[in-house]
Amino acid sequence: MHSFVILNLRCPVCGKSLMDHDKLVDNEKSVRLIIEVQGKKGIIRLSSVYGSYNYISDIEIPEGEIAKFYCPHCKSQIVSEEKCDVCDAPLSTFNIDFGGKVSICTRKGCQKHFLEFSDLNVALKKFYQEYSYSGHVHEDFDLRVKNKEVKQVDETKEIIKSGTFLQAYCPHCRKSLIEDNMLKLKITNGKTGYLMLSPYLNVFTSKSSIFLPEDKIIRNIICPHCNKSLIVDDVKCEKCGSPVAKISISARTKFIDFYICTKKGCRWHGLKDEDYNDIILEDSDEW
Image (cartoon, rainbow, N blue to C red; front, side, top):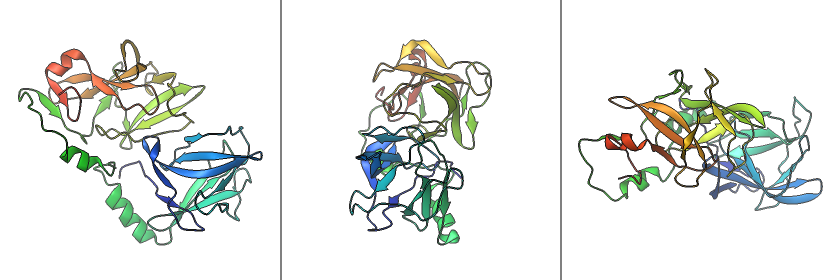
C-alpha cells in the first residue's frame, strides 16, 4: 500500500467539491475554504494529503487560535457537533468523494484528525485501486507522458523511467532512506520534524510532520540515521537557485548522486554532470 492518501473533499451542506487544482499544497491539489480568525476572513488552502498539516492562508493564524471554516460555494460554516478529544475545540467535518468523512480540529497547532467510512469494504476497495503499490500518480501523468515529444536517445545510456521507484540511501552512512514506501528525511525549520517524499521519479507528492510554508527554503535536511546534513555547497537548483540536498540512488550499474531542491514546492531534481554521460532521467530537460 502506498503511504500517500489524497482526499477529494466536498462540502457536507451543499455537496460541491472543495478541491482547487490550480493552487497546490504538498505538490497536490488543495482544499479551498473560507477561514475566519479573530473576526478576520480570508482564504485558506489545506493540504489534501492525509496526515499533512501544511496550508496556504492569506490571513495570519496565531498559534492556539480556533478558526472557523466556511464553504466557498454556499458560505455555510463547516462545523461538527463533536469536540476534539485532545484540546476540546470544535471539529470541522468534510465529506469524502468515495463515501465517508474526515474530521479535523479547528485549533491551530492541534494535529487531531480522523477518518470514518460509511462502508468500510467499499472504502478499502477504493483505496486499493487508487493507492496500490504502484503508487499514486497525478491524474494527468499518463496523458503527459503519452503526449511528450519523442526524442532520439543514446541507446548506450541507462534510462530511469518516470514512475520508477527510486531506492534512496544516505550518501554518508549508506543506510536506506525508504520507510513505509516513502523517502523519509529529517528536517529542521524552526522545529525539527520529518519530510516524506514520493520515491517515484517525477511524482512529487510530499507531506511533513511539521508545518512547511509553500515556496520557502527548508533550513536543513538531515539523514535520520547518522544525523549528517545532506545540503551541499557546490550545487544549486537550476530552476530557482535555492540550495539543494544530495541523496544516493541505485541505478543498474552503480550508486549515483541525486539532487533535490530545498525550496518547498520546487520540482527540480538532477544528477551530477558526469552521471549524465551514462544515465538519463525520463521526462527530463536533459534529453
